[in-house]
Image: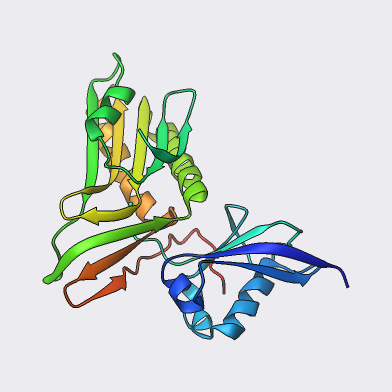
Length: 241
């Protein structure tokens, strides 16, 4: 029987459950993305326990379990998102919109200067910063990891939809990965617009959607332990089971 070889990636909590960050798997010709899930669920039964919150991706695109595989494909297991110049991944649209992933400190002012035009009467900047506690439990620092290529492409899709819906002139989204100290920004969203209401709406919609659909995960480190922050996928995203 013919076989196909695929690359399999695990992120966030799922990496801890399976015990590896990356694996290579051979499956029978005609196998599906769901076949890959079943293979690892047998090896790591806890995957099945949390399957209702797992999303699968095929070649950096959200995927249904029924999607067929071919040789050389890449399948990723994605836990709920928690969400958030040296860019690891960057997309710049012809209109000037910017979407990027970085491990460096985010320069919000530089992003404003890059996006703002003479036609703009309002620029709204949102910065998501690391706070020093969660429900009274002292936070030491955070670590973010992401499915980088898929994350920046998803941010770009969100940003373009927001521009079309609100009529703003430009939008920028940058998310940082790696270790973040207290007070540092994990994500910056800038919306530039001729009118203030559209800019405010765009920035708010941007962060709300980013936190539910962009594949980036947060681990919080406390004085007495550490934990992956459990988020929640948007209802539009198909789950593994």
